[in-house]
Length: 158
Image 1 (tube, one colour):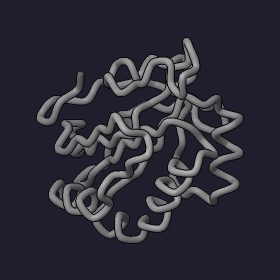
Image 2: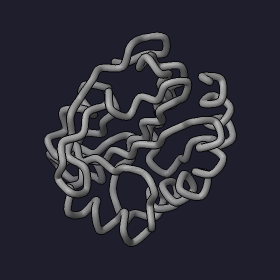
Image 3: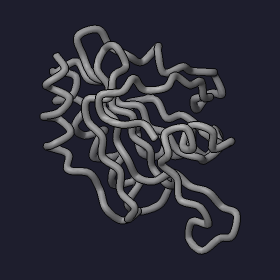
């Protein structure tokens, strides 16, 4: 379990072009990194959430904040999802479910599918040192984060 006030564990996951990307490369000097875990590409709520973050990028850029999406979908699905929705931030693939387990943000037997593990909808906001300054995790995959609260929390890191 990763909690507020703790340093977020580093990880390396492939992006939509299958390029390995590490958490450390997304940490911004004098800024925030929003790690946004979502259950599945192309689902209604996940699409709405990622598009809302996309539409808020101008405000987030003003406070030097970076969004990184993470799902358990494979990089090919994530690429189609990012292109289809014109996402302007990286989407990483945790297809081995290692990072969702490391951060303890996963649903087992998701959607009543025995053996299928998906990410819980969650957001970790990290400062420039990778310390968690804000954490939101939902057991309800239909619930979205409070976007204004995310912006306020991210603004406090600058």
